[in-house]
Length: 151
Image (cartoon, rainbow, N blue to C red; front, side, top):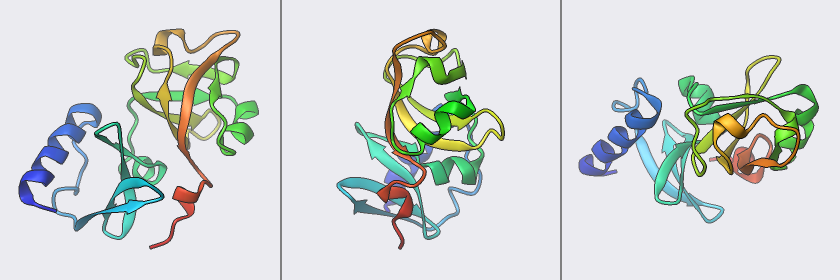
């Protein structure tokens, strides 16, 4: 990856997620996997491109401890989320209030605060905890083909 591309990448990441430690010193490659552009950092797929911006994969969230733009679901929602279902408002226990409609968010489970999926907010974070409706479109989740892709 060219130096100018790396610099632009780091600036965009830091703007949204804060400083991601050790990323600047890492070996980074870009590739296409399952019709999606990905960044491979030290041999791990840690970021994917969606709508012209880079976002962390579930592994990226784990690797860098990203805790921004988080939506937390209850235990009853976990089995649906890890099977690729969109996230429904009744299963959400909390959501970062800075989330705007269209933002890419991290879905975590309530009991252990572990990331389960990456999705696109369909409503603002302040409206996600509700009695009905779809709140997040699932883009990538633990156990999908992208998660299981081996290098």
